Amino acid sequence: MTDIAERGGIVAHPTQIQRAIREVLDGRRSGFRAFIPMVGPAVIASIAYMDPGNFATNIQAGARYGYSLLWVVLLANLIAMLFQALSAKLGIVTGRNLAEMCRDELPRPLVWAMWIVSEIAAMATDLAEFLGGAIGLSLLFNLPLIWGMVVTAIVTYGILTLDRRGFRPLELVIGALVAMIGLCYVIELFIAPVDWASAAFSLVTPQLQDAAAVTIAVGIIGATVMPHAIYLHSGLTQARTIARDDGDRRKLLRYSNREVIVALAIAGAINMAMVMMAAAAFHAGHSGVAEIETAYHTLTPILGAGAATVFLISLLASGISSSTVGTLAGQMIMQGFVGFRIPVWLRRLVTIIPAFIVVALGVNATNALVVSQVVLSIALPLPMIALLYFTQRRDIMGAFVNGPMTRVGAVVGAAVVLFLNTILLLQTFGVSLPFLQG
Image (cartoon, rainbow, N blue to C red; front, side, top):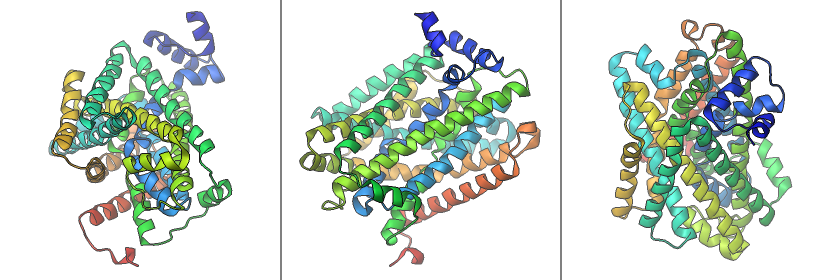
């Protein structure tokens, strides 16, 4: 069976997958057999773009504005591709992740400040993702939310323990959960009466119908590039194999960029499918749907119990996978900034305590998701600017320093995301913005 798996390019044991990668770099594998061993880091990072926070935003966009904001989802996805590719490049070229680069290259007071902010962001990320999985379980099996959280905690911890066997088993499990989310939305699109012509038109035609549409667009783009995903991707690529020379690095970058495009294209398609499902199901008569629980209860009479169940399965897969990845990212951030590693069970416990406190206090789960997105918006500028700074330094990147087109694209993308995050924060804190009125 091992021989068959290796001939197909799919190998599970860590030493086998590293041998397979070396065969690719040495030119002894080509085509599809060469691509498969390289797949993993971008698939894991792509979970950040399919987490429960995306569910809530996309449902609101589709319910209220139909298909008209699909172009925003596309734009957000393109920006995400660029920054995840840069994060992967940093890990491949330098052999260090972004947190380690910050620790080694930046002033100590700034490093400590970045670590504290990044830890808070990691906990906020896990709050949203953990709550999403718990909501899915509680609705699917009619459990109290607190028991849904307990089950989610146990399952995610079990997945995290796979990391002891190397990076490949975890990659395969996360990949399977991504496939499950994608399959659920393929099913939803067959069930929902999607207007494909309108969807295609809206995908390539920018339009904002009113000020509220601008607000939702800000929410879609402003929270697209996740701080933990930027840190994580650079660490996932650094550990897979050791590049012997620049030739190896060029090949690794080529395969990494291909994987980023494929993985985030799938994530973008799933986000678009969320918007289209919400548009088809809710826009005509239920445009006020904005919460995950409301969407589930509204789907049942409109599209049937099957569609509602598929929706919850996708939410559950999203919550479990993204919560697992969020904990992994938090561990990497701590180890990178301060060189301190704690047991995964303790890390898991620390990151889920805020979610249990939120539920115990009776805080609305959707409101908690909104607050977590605000925290992420505050934390995002630091890793984004640091990534641009390091990948534009020739003394760090050598021949792989960002080219003029990449530099311009990255600066413009960062400016767009940071500007929209600023708008999101100002709106959250009640600041009146005249250009969004009327």
